[in-house]
Structure formats: C-alpha cells, structure tokens
Image 1 (cartoon, rainbow, N blue to C red):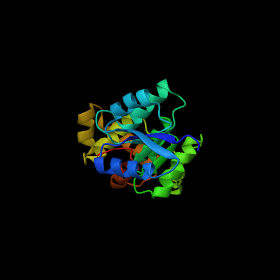
Image 2 (image 1 turned 90 degrees about the vertical axis):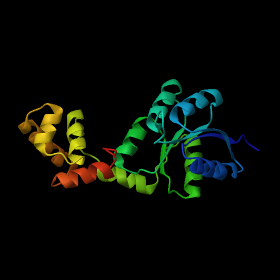
Image 3 (image 1 turned 135 degrees about the vertical axis):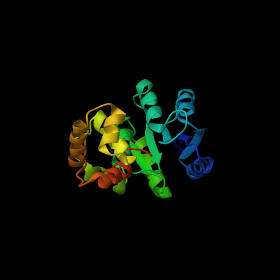
Image 4 (image 1 turned 30 degrees about the vertical axis):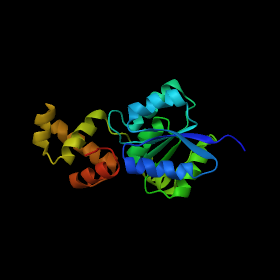
Length: 207
C-alpha cells in the first residue's frame, strides 16, 4: 500500500475541525497528522509536521488563513494548501488564491468534493468547485478599487453620507463624490445601497 496523504487541519471551530478530521481519517489513503485552532498554530505545526496537504480555515483568530498561507508559502513554496471557508465572495477567493492556496472550498461542500480536492491538490493540481469558479468568472475582468476607494466604500457600508466621509477621512467633499462615482462604476452598480450590498456579498468589506 502506498504512503497515506498526511493532512494538517487548521480550523478554529471544534465541531467543524472534528468533522473534517473524521471524514479524512475514514479514507484508506489519508490520515490527519495534526489539528490547529488558529493560523499561527497552523504555521508552527506545518514546520514541525511538514504535512502533504494543509486545510486552512480562512477566518481564524490570532492569524487568519490568508496570512497563514502567505507565511507557509514564504518558507515552503511547494506547500499544498486548501482554503476552507464559509465565505464564497470573489474577493475572498482571489485573496486566498493570491496567497498561494491551490483549492478553495466553502464549508457546505459535500464530503466527496473535499476528498476530491485533497487528492487533486496532493497531485499538484488546482481545484475550484464549479460554484467558486463561477463566482470568480462572473467578476473578471474588473478594475481594482484603490486603497482610498476601499476606505470610502467601508464608510458607505456603515451608512455615512459624503459630508461625514469627507470629515472622517479629512478630504474634500467633492473628492468623496469622485471616489463614490468611481466605486459605482468599478462595481458595476447604480447606487450606494447596491455598492454596499456588493461589497459585503463579494467579500471586499467584512462587517
């Protein structure tokens, strides 16, 4: 029998962590070698255990999954990483992929999809479920929001008017108006409410 795929599971919710570990350990070709409950622990355990595949929850305390992925990839460029998350917004996906994960799964995936992803990534492939790929494809290409536009968008999401945004960021009100115009056009929406909705749905802004 060939070597089992050694897997590190990083997930801060105990129930989810146990669930994933149980599914993995039931497979004849896989074994969980470690469990981490935050991103920093994941990076430390990765160094100790050198797993074949690491499952990273994106939202974890101390250090999130994207930061953990970046830290692992910096020292071990050939690491095989899978992002596991409740969020399927295209910005979340893009951030994770930019950090070097080879698969992106939302937590409602079926067992076989999880196992398929582990085997694919272990074999050096990228794995994006159809829904995730569709979410990405629907949003590309689009001009990136500038750092300032993201700041303005955050305040729009909080319900601030242009005058309040101008005051908050110490910029002129007409500058805010220009930013808002650019944000609407880049997000492909008609008004501030739609901009706020799109920002949250797509993971550009996290509440």
